[in-house]
Length: 120
Image (cartoon, rainbow, N blue to C red; front, side, top):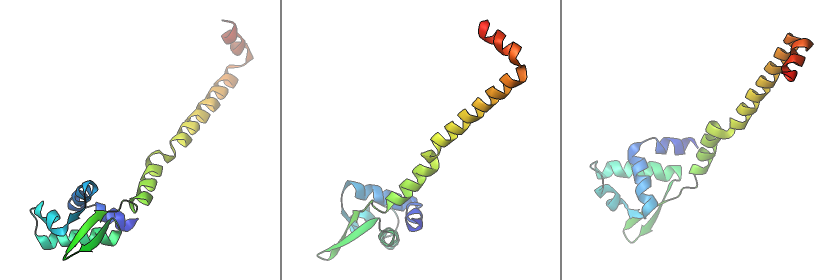
């Protein structure tokens, strides 16, 4: 998961992943879409390959790169759990706090006030 997080931290690599989501591309096709040098694009592709997010297939004399989103799953699961996983737990904790607060208030008012509350 750490390799994937490092790989997607760079905006150039995120852009490459977006391009590969649409279609497989050669390294040359990818490099043409950037103003950075071809060696720099190659380094970005190597990071993406090493993280498992990109697969390279040799077709003739060219490498064709394809997106492999599977390594994103653990990161997505972790982020989902981090942002929403305990949402119900927080809501239930808040409800429990409110129930205890209401009980405590009723006890402190005494039985006479409690009866007036229900008859009014």
